[in-house]
Structure formats: structure tokens, C-alpha cells
Amino acid sequence: MRKYWEMMKSQIKVDMAYPLWYWASSVATVVQMLIIFAFWNAVYENRTTISDMSLEAMVTYTMIAVLLNDFVAGVGTQLANQVRDGSVSIELMRPYNLLDKLVALDLGFKISAVTRQTIPLLVIAYLFLGVSLPVSWEAALLFVLSAILGIFIGTQLDLILGIAAFWLDYIWGLRMLRGAILLFFTGALVPITMFPEWLRILSAYLPFQSMVFIPVSIYTGQLTGMAALQAMIIQVLWLAGIYAGIRVLWSYAIRRVTIFGG
Amino acid sequence: MIEVKNLSKHYKIVQKDPGLTGAIKSLFKRKYTTKKAVDEINFNIEDGEMVGYIGANGAGKSTTIKMLCGILTPSNGEITVNGIVPYKERKRNAKNIGAVFGQRTQLFWDIAVRESYELLKHIYEIPEEEFQASIAMFTEVLDLEPLMSVPVRQLSLGQKMRCELAAAFLHNPSIVYLDEPTIGLDVAVKVKIRQFIREMNRLRGTTVILTTHDMQDIEEICKRIIIIDEGKVLYDGSLQSIKERYGDKRIIHFELEREGEFQLPSSMADKVEWSYGDEGRVSISFSNHTITAADVISEMLQSYQIRDLTIADSKIETIVQDIYMRGI
Image 1 (cartoon, rainbow over the protein chains, first blue to last red):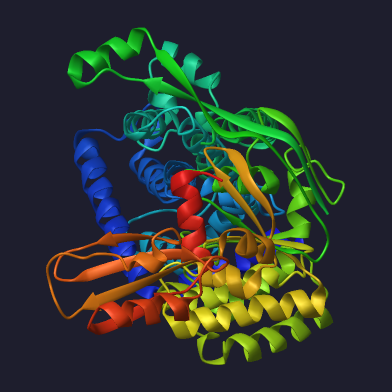
Image 2 (tube, helix red, strand yellow):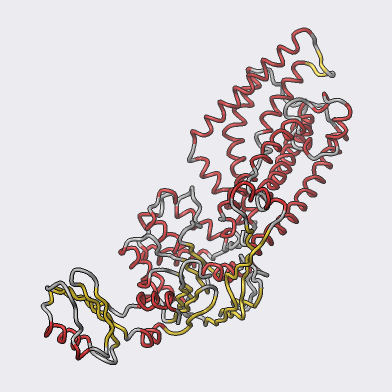
């Protein structure tokens, strides 16, 4: 465990060395938040609620979702690049698990992003864009836990993209497809409660809503008490299942490299 | 100790017809050819040996090294490295080996060299005292002090290679594989690297397996060489004995004053081979056992005006070149 912890710390140090990048991506997120704000204000011009959500609830939901959505991506593309240029075989010579190493580096990156980017943006959103605080202390705590679970699910799921590169020469198409599916089914664009019934049912059987929709719904108070806990148990189950599935795929992928020479 | 028995590695290569139609055809029906990258090789390497593993490009060197590292599974045959079958217990094997691949970096690209080493300390679980002692020694022998705080991506090739080498030996592995560690480096850096490798072998008894195209590396580091060509072992034995077996051949290049017809002095007729280039250049090759270089020169001096001459040494380079071209 210690080695992965150290890798994570070293990634945080690297990120501290590149402050400019933060500014660029912070500005991009602020612009995105302004657009969302303007959009929903226009939509709500002639009405007070949509699917029982007030303007304030909707803005809060979408802003938190946008911020969280930046964290559910992972290092699949990085893994895919390593597979492509063959450096993955060098990594196999090290006494660590490559997937865990990549995830550790990614977590380091995300931790520095939260402290340096997300928290300031949350303050801006609260002060100027009408985002409300979590409904209760309990909700705030559950939101943090649920968001961490969601981020872990997203990070693990993303590794599939890298593993696919063992079989496919180009994963560009797959990446595009993933982007579209994620934006929609995680609930990052609009709350899943606004989907038509059949899509809502379909989405309930997919892991994607565990990544953004569940944590953000806990934040906004749409999921509380037992329902919130139940949703988090589902998150844990998804995480365990995806984690195990990825490891199985990974062992096949490694066998392929070691037999065919990558 | 490394034991390799009847080791083979075959690759299946997809045969594609040229052009777009070929590409489409190959989507439905694939033809494969088998390439024997490594074909039934055998060798044993004892603890503390320094072995040169040489061969032309594509001879199967890297494939063998990869199998020894455990990152390629053999098609046939057996390997054990310190009693471990590398491809079955890759991570356990990884703790005992170090490697430098001249073309790829293993250091962490964005962080300073010193921090890369700190990370390796945790990755290989090196005890603090041992780590400090190694760093102190490497810093001195490889002159790393000025590089320690520089991020890896800012290092020059020679600086990077020195750092890589230190990284490979940091966890005191019993075996180190060096795949072209001196490629593209200047003479001064090469000297430093060779010196470091010898020093590590002397102090720690590290087994070193070296692949290189620079025969000077081999001469200065290895006592034993294994020559491989088209996946088969051509020669396995001491550097000294290959020199004795093939190294008695010498060549003298003459530049003659007078151009035109060249007639070999009759006294040397049976003892040497010669070839005549243009503008009065003559190369005479002979064996040390039949005639000495001094005799050849004096015979030539009696018959011709000589402007210049050079004696080619019996370097391993010429021998290996000979073996690659003509076989053993």
C-alpha cells in the first residue's frame, strides 16, 4: 500500500509545479457554469418548477454535477497510450500492479484539483450563481462519501478504455462513444428524474448514474435517509463488481501481451 | 543463476496483401506466417558472470531478454532465474532484477531525479540505510550530484542514461539486464558507464547480461559472449577463445606510390590473400601463423614504393562481423 501512497504524493508534487494548467481549466469550468446558469434562467422564465424542481434546485444540481463530472473520468487514455507505444511491457517488469499505480497517480491528481480548483469554484458558485448549500449536515457528509464512491467507480470504469487498446489499434471511436454515454447517463447534463420513464428504468440498471446522479441527488436532498443509504449500497456493489471485472480483463490482456509480444 | 533450456519463441505474423483490397481481404480471412524469433537456445549463466549477448538486429536478443524478465511467455522450453520461472511469477522475479532499455526511460518523467529514486525506494521496499549508501556511491561513481534536482525530461541523453543505470542497480538486484545501455552516447559517458558496471560487479557480485552493438563495451566488460543469429546460438564461450580461434587473421592496407598493375611478390604467393582497389590501394590479409606482419611489410617494401600503410587490429568487431556474414 505504501508504494501507491508515495506515488500519489509524488503526483501531487508534480501538479504543484504546473500552476498555469489550473488557471486554464478553472476558467473553462467557470464559463461552463455561467452558460448553465443563463440557460436554466431562460428555461424557468415562464414557470416556477419543472418535474417538481425549482430554479434554485435545478441550478444547484447542474452546477454540482458539472464540478463532479470532471472527476469521474480516469486514466484509461493514458493506459491506452502506454499500450500503443509498448512501454506497458516495461511497466510489467516492476513489482507493482500497473492499474493500481495509474489509479494512485490519478487520485493524487484529483486531490490537488479539489483543493486548488473545485473548492474555490464552489465558493464562487455559492456567492454569485445561486447554488445552495447541502440541505443538512447529514446530507453534506453522505454527499462526500457518495461522491468519493462515484469517483472510484468512474476511475475504474475508465480503465476499460485502456484495456481495450490491447485488442484495438485505435480507441478514438470508443472514447467518443464513452463521452456521449457518460454525459447523458451519469446525469451530468440533466437530472435523471427528468428522463422519460423507460430511460429512467434503463438507467437504474446501469452503473453510470452511480457516478454523478446519486451523489448530487443526496446533496440537493432528493435522496435522503434510507433511500440515500440504499443508493450508496448500490454504489458499493457496482464498485466491487467493476473492480473485479476489470482485474479479470486485465489478466487476459497481460496474457495477450506476454504471449504475442504486445 | 540463470538456466535456459530449449527455449523458443514463435510469433504469428498476419500476412497482408498490398493495397486496399488486401486490407479488406485480411478483415475476413487472415493468413499467418510463423517467425521463429528464438529457436531452441540453451545456456547457463552463473552468479556474478558478466555476459555479452550479441547478434545482428532482429537476431532475437531482445526477445530472449524479455523472456528472462518475465514479460514474454516462451512458446517452448524452460527458463529459471534464481529458481523462479519468470513469466509465472513476474512480480517476484521483478524484485531480483534490474534493467536498462537504452531506448526507453524507466524514471518518472515529470519529477526530479532524486524524487524518482525516493519513489523507487518505496516501490522496491529498499531499507533506508541501504538506500542512502547506494545513492552516495552512485552519485560519486556516475557523477550524479548536479543532476539530482533536475526533472528527468530536462536531462540530456547521456545524463539520463547515467541516472537510468543508477536506477537499475538501486535495489541491489542479483541480475541486471542492460539492453544497449551506451547507444547514442559520447565516449566520455561510455567510459563512465562501463566503469560503473564493472564496479557494481566487483563490489556486489551482480550478474550482468549486456546486449550491445558496441564491441568496445563487450571487450571492456565481458569475459564471456553468446552470439545469436536468426534465433540460434552461434557461439557461447570466452571472449579470449573466440579471439584466439578467429583473431589470428590480420589485414594490412597499403597505399602505393605507383598506380597501375599490381603483382604480388612471389615469395608471399601461397601465404596471403590480396585485393586491389583503385588508385594504388592494396589490402593484404593473412594469418599470424603463416607469416608475420613485419615480413609482409618488408616484402612489399622491396617491390614497391609505399606512401602509407595501416594494420587493422584483430578486434572482436571484425571477428563478429565475419561471423554474422559467413557463419561460424
